[in-house]
Length: 43
Image 1 (cartoon, rainbow, N blue to C red):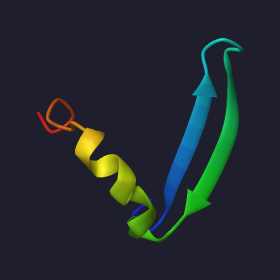
Image 2 (spheres, rainbow, N blue to C red; image 1 turned 180 degrees about the vertical axis):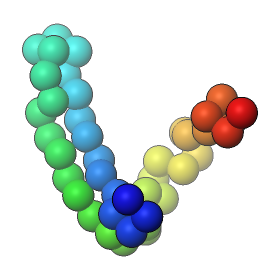
Image 3 (cartoon, helix red, strand yellow; image 1 turned 135 degrees about the horizontal axis):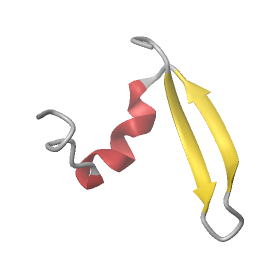
Image 4 (cartoon, helix red, strand yellow; image 1 turned 90 degrees about the vertical axis):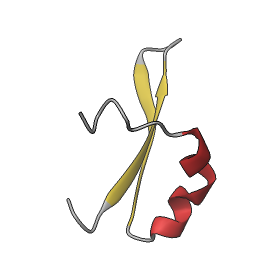
């Protein structure tokens, strides 16, 4: 999915997905970038 991003909210209390939001503008990711650690995924 090179040109599509998705935000998924999961509720552990209910054990279900409560929101799925698809988008193509990477600016919506900016609030999360400082909290993401992708080092383990890049190995």
